[in-house]
Length: 274
Image (cartoon, one colour):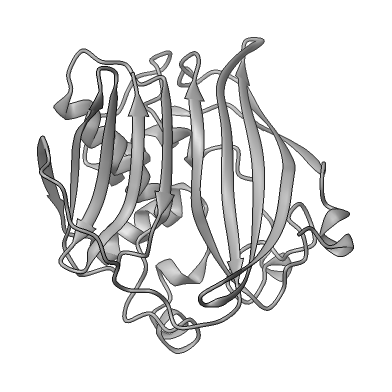
């Protein structure tokens, strides 16, 4: 249920502006190990997560390094934050080097009881506009969980996949992705914090980075198809230094199911619609 305290944040709105500059696009490309698009070219899918960030000074960040709660997001203090998943519709490409805006709204706040204790789910909608055109319609699910031991394995057989790629996540990769997305969440770069305070064995790979890798793995392995919708969900975290795999299989004529996994089972699930 939504409490009165959290309910005060329902409908809260924020608008952010960005020019999608080439210099940051080049840095994202270097992080992903691909060639950078030029000024005026379409921004690759999910790279928009590196833009429209509203920076705050360090004094306005919380103990985990994120902007302190009670500003745009509700004051769900004393919990650990994770990006649980999301849903996106790709309507028109965002173009590199052109002004754009993101219109955001807190759509839903629900508190549930899970196996690890209390969970607060916050759903935020983002609409990305450029040249008076709605380009991306997105919902993000952010979960705040009571401090508890992280889930490091998951049951479930890995299905036979149409393709498979491996990733060796390094500390450099995680640092660079944190830098290009201006993400100061300490679980991605602060080893003493992530191990001593949140209980992980090493740095945590960013959920949106995994989602980006999954979608682009699918694009590489299904040529001549243009993604129209993408939904993803984090099952459990992946950890720096431990190799994981990306793969996909046919769900229907115009859909593929995607999976990130390692020897400890599935970690992220996604579906792309063409």
